[in-house]
Length: 534
Image (cartoon, rainbow, N blue to C red; front, side, top):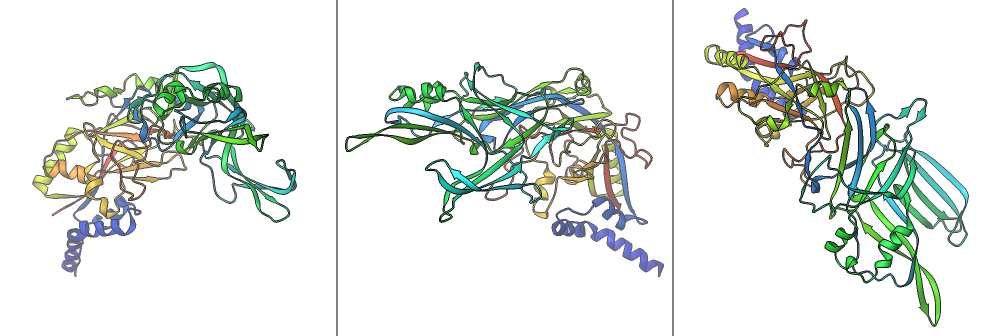
């Protein structure tokens, strides 16, 4: 009987890698691989080990170079907190005419100019409120009608309240005085642009909500107005009268190249220095000019309503501009010993292991992870002499509950690459058809959150094929995918330029780097591996 049990155990060990791949395919990596592996190796010739890693901070100088056409979302707002400091985020975009060399007719005069933004908002039924006015009078013709306004809270990152009050924001619009270039150009996220600060094009209080409006006629329930969910604010009519309407027939309105050098763009920002950040799809924004001109019919002149629209869509350069104030923060102190991003590709890179790791998107810091040479060499010798087979390998990083114990949402995704590469990890390409997930998270809503980064294929290549070893560089962010196929677009296509998340993680236990970690020291940055022996 004992011989039969040993035979079964060894059979399980032999088929375990194939079984594991099947489970990955069926469950899309939902099971905890550590626990799953332990079920098969416990009490047999299998092992579950953790080793201390060299973890360090990488200073990106609060800036990132971005090709502006890669923006599928932008941020607006401000946030200040004691660990990473203050952050102010503006949306800057070019503006184009929808129709060039326009004819505004005879005696055109603007009634109003409206900027429409469509921030992302919460859609759950318990988030929205509906207000119905049964005895509403529609002003155009004094029509008896019903008005239904549905209100949605904007999706926010930051402080929903300051003190006992809902966080107030005041949105402001200014004219950009610098030429913004073309959509294929690279631009720095902290680039300063000259603004016409002497003239505010528009200002409006923002209560953190957006709404839709439907107005129907009482007599037959036909729609008089249907306005999609949005935030609308009036802009300065006199400015647009002089800037655009009065330039009828001028060369500056005759083609796009002339116009974007004449009216170079707008900046949308908030007045406050603390609050929250919200996002929107930049191509959904727009400006509508409502004006009247003279229309003559049978000798009778009538003032007639007209509209002209300005295009803020994908043909324009648009970006999230982020400015930081880090003075006196733990983040600022940590960056003094961090690796500079421009030094990452140097040979024989020297790093300072850090006990706290600071990760922030939108130009903020990255982290580097180095598997100690002694650990690599130990595993190589075990592979050569003991015939170990690595079943699972991951980098585990824990939230630093002393530094980051607050109500801010934690990052749900990370970007990972080898230090000198712009390609995906081979784990992502080798296992992409098996439902592979690069990052697995746990307990994100608590101070005990942690992240597992799957590096099985990468580590096996280092150990079994003696491939070049390199550090891993990790950023906050999510990879972008093709809208039609779902395929990832590439290592450099990600939402890091406008991703608002940040976190402090536990770094190296400097006394246990390269050593096996015990259960009494579980939360240092660590390499966790499951392996078998033949």
